[in-house]
Amino acid sequence: MTENLRELFHLQEGLVFLNHGSFGACPKPVFKTYQDWQLTLENQPVAFLDQERGLLDNMKAARVAVAKELGANEQDIVGVENATAGLNAIARSQELKPGDEILTSNHEYNALENTWRFVADRTGAKIVVADIAIPLRSEDQFTSSILKKMTENTKVLFLSHITSPTSLVFPIENVVKEARNRGIITVIDGAHAPGLIHLKLNELNADFYSGNCHKWMMAPKGSAFLWAHKDVQHTLEPTVISHGWVPQNGNKKQLGAFGDSRFIDCFEVQGTRDPAAWFTVPAAIEFKQLHNWEKVKRRSSELAMATAVTISKLTKIPLFASHEFLAPQLVSIPLPDCDVDELKNRLLSEYDIEIPVFRWADICIVRLSIQGYNTQQEADALVNAISEILGLR
Ligand SMILES: Cc1ncc(COP(=O)(O)O)c(C=O)c1O
Image (cartoon, rainbow, N blue to C red; front, side):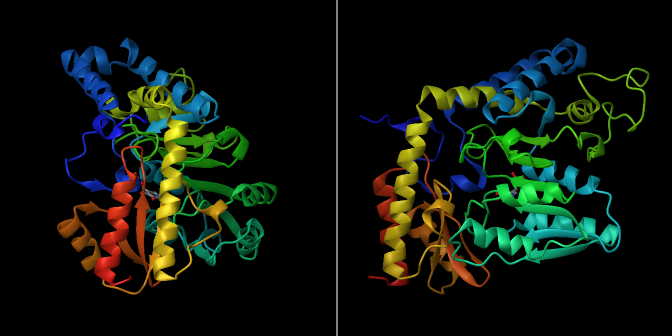
C-alpha cells in the first residue's frame, strides 16, 4: 500500500492542487522544524543571531547538507532567499561594457529577463536571444541553436536548467563546456532543478548556478542557494552590502571577517534576517529520504506524463519535446487557442483545481505539476474539466 501523503501536507481540504511548480508545498514535519527554528530564535534572539554564538555554525550545517545533496563543495554554496535573489547578485556582478553580449534563450523566466534587461541598460551590453524551437527533439538541436548565436562578443551565457513556461530540461552540459572553452561566463537558472532532476553541481562545472529549495526539495519558502565556481567567487558581489562584505583585495583579518571565505561572509552576514527556512533544508532532505522520495518521484512523473499524453491526444497537439527533455513531475501541455484567464478561473471556481494556465509565444499552455500528495483521481478530474470547458470530447 502506498502511503497517503496528502495527510502530510497543510494543503486546503478539497483543493485539487496541481501547481507545486510555482511555490512548492512544505510537508508538515518539515514545516514544524521551520517553526521550531523560529521559536528558538524568538526565545533568545541575541544568542541565535550572534555570529559567534551559533549563527554561523547553523548556516554552515545547512550549507554542508545542501552541498552534499547537490554534488557540490560546501565552500562553494551559500543560502539565499530565492533563485531570483541569487541570480540578481550574479547578474549585477558582471562587469560588462557596450558591445558585450549576454546570450540567452526564448524560454526564460520573466523576472530574470528583467534582471538582465536592467544589467544591459546600465552597461550598454546587448541581450541576444537564441530561439530554441519546439518540439525539442535532440541535444544537437539545442546545442546548435545556442552555438549559432555565440560570437566573440558573447560574455555571458544565461540559461534555465528547467524552463518555466515550457517545462523543458535543457541539455546544457555541452554548451556549458563550450562556453568555458571560449572564456564565456555561464549563469544557470536552476529554480526548478534541485529535487526534480539529478543535479550534480561540480560535474556540471558552470560558473554560477542558483536554485530553489522551496520547490522540489520540499523546504519552506525563503530557502534557495547560490553556487559559484571557486575560480569566479572573487568576482561576485552581494546585492546587499553589510557586515560580511570586505573589498575584493581587502585584508580579511583587519576588516573583521566572520567565516570561511569572503564569498561566504558576503552572503551569510547580511543585516538582520530570519534564516529559519535555510536552516530547515536539511530536515527537508531527511523527510524525502524517510518517505522513499525516489519512488514518490517516479510515481508522480508517470502520472504527470500519462495525463499530459491523454490531454495531448484529446487536443491532437503534440507535447513540446521528446520524453527525455520533458521535466519529470512538471509538464507544460499546449492547448487549443482559448481565453487562458477564463480557463484558469473556471478550473478553480467550478472544479476546485489550482493550476497555471497562460500564454507563451502565442501558445495556450496549462502547466501540470504532480507531487506525492496528488492522485490519479485528481489527474482525471483535470482531464475531465479541460475537456468539458474546451469541448474536447
Ligand atoms: C525558471 C525560473 N527561474 C526563476 C524563478 C524564480 O524563482 P523565485 O521566485 O523563487 O525566485 C522561477 C520561478 O518559478 C522559475 O520558474
